[in-house]
Length: 444
Length: 146
Image 1 (spheres, rainbow over the protein chains, first blue to last red):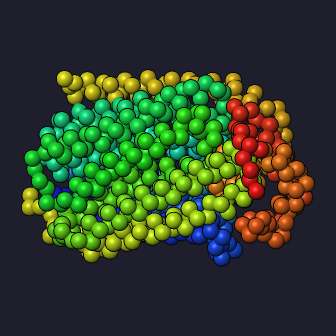
Image 2 (cartoon, rainbow over the protein chains, first blue to last red):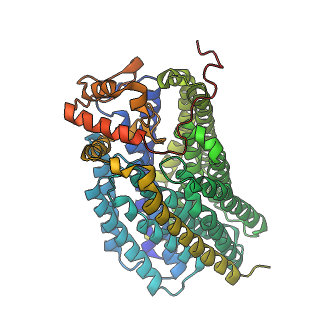
Image 3 (tube, one colour):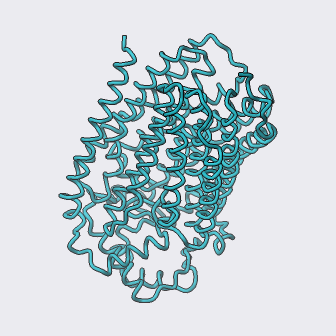
C-alpha cells in the first residue's frame, strides 16, 4: 500500500462484514417462516424481515464498493484522498443511516417498494451521504497525477449509481408508473451501472494479480462495459412485460435480455484469459481465486439463470415465483458478493501488513460459501419449478402449493448453513488481520 | 485487431445510442400507453388512498402484485375476482392475525373505510391490462389434484 489514506477502506469493509452476517440472519428468519416456524412474527413479521434482508444486501455491497473505491482511487490517481475527516463523516453517516433504516423497518417506517423500502426522509440523507462520497472520490481523481481508464470506469459507475437513485424517490399514484421507475433504479443498477463498478474493480484486481499489461486489460474493459449497456439498458424491458405497459416491451425485453449474458460471458472469458496470459504469480492466491470466481459465477447466476426466465413466454409463468429468487441469489452472490469479498481479500494484507496468504480457513471459506450458495440456488429452483407447475399451470391454491414446497425449504436451510459457515470463516479471517497500520506503508 | 480507442468509441457510442432509445420508449409508454392500459380515469381518491395504505404497510413485503413483491403470501392482482370484496375487507379489518393454514398475516385492524380504500385499489389493479398476466392455468382439470 502506497498511500496512508487507503487505510480508510478497512472501516467500510468491516461495516460490510457486520451487515452481511446480519443479512444472512434475516434470511434464516424468512426460510424458517416458510417452514411454518414463525415464532418471531410479532417482533419481526415477514415483510420486516424481507425489507431488512434486501436492504442490508444493498448496503453491505455499497459499503464494500465504497471501501474498494477508497482503496483503488488513490493508487490509480497516485495521490492521497483529499480529506480523511470527510471520509470519516461519510462513513459514520452511512453506518447511522443503515442502522436507523433497519430499526425503522421493524416499526413500520418504510415504503412498500421492493428493494427501495428506505423511507423518503432517510433517502435525502442517503443522497447527502453519496454526494459526500463522490466529492471525495472525484476531487481526488481530479487532483491526481493520473486518470486511468480503470479509475474512470469505476467512478463513472459510482456516479451513475448515485444519479439513478433519484427516480426511486418520486411518488406516483399510479402503481404501474411507480413500478416503472422503481426498475429504473433496481434494474439499471444491478444490470447496468453496478456492472461498470464491477468491471472497474475486476480490471484493477486483474492488473495487480496477473501482471498483464494495463492497456490490454483496459481495452477489454471498454468492450465488456460496452456490451453491458448495449444489452442491459433495453434489457430493462423484461421488467415491463406484465405490469400494465405496452406489448412492444415483450419483444424488446426478450431480445435484449437474451443478449445480457454476453457481458458476463465476456467478463468470465476475460478474467480466465488474463489469468492464463499473466506471467506474474501474485502470492495472494485467494484473492485471485475470488476474482476468477466472481467472473465465472456471475456468468452462471446473473447471465445464464437470468436468461432462463426472461423470455416472455417463459416469464409469463415464472413471473412472481421462486424462480426469480433462484436467479436473484446466485446473481447477487456471483456478481457483487464475491467481488466485494475478492477485493477485501486482496486489500487486507496490504492494509494491515500481515501477509496471511495461506490460512486454510480462507480456502474453506471460499469453497463452503460457494457450494452452499449453489445448493441454495438449486433448492430455490426446485421450489420455483414446483410452484410454477402446481400453482400456475395446474391452478392449485397458493397455500396448498406452499405446503408442497416445504421440503425444498428444508434443503434451502441445510445449504444456507453451509454457506453461512463459509462466511463465518471468512469474517473470522477478516478480523484476524487486525486493524490498519502505518507499518504497512511502502517506503516512498 | 481492435484498438483501445475503438473499444472506447464502441462503449460510449453504444451507451448513448441505447440510452436515448430507452428514454424515447419510456416517454411513449408513460405518456401514451400507461394511462390507457391502467384506466387512469378510474383512479379515484379512494384508489389513491388505498395505494398509500398498501405502500405504508409494505403489503409487497409478503404478497406479489402484478407479479412483483415477495413470495410468502398470495398474488393480489386478481384477488377481488377470486375472493370477493367482503372477504378481503374482513381480512384487512381483522384484529387477530389472519392465518390460513397457520401462515400468519399481520393483524392490520383497519377501519371499514381504510379497508374499502385498499379494496378499491386492488379492484383498480385487477382491471389493468397486464398483457395476459396472470395466465389461466392451462392444465387445470387435466391433472388430478386430490
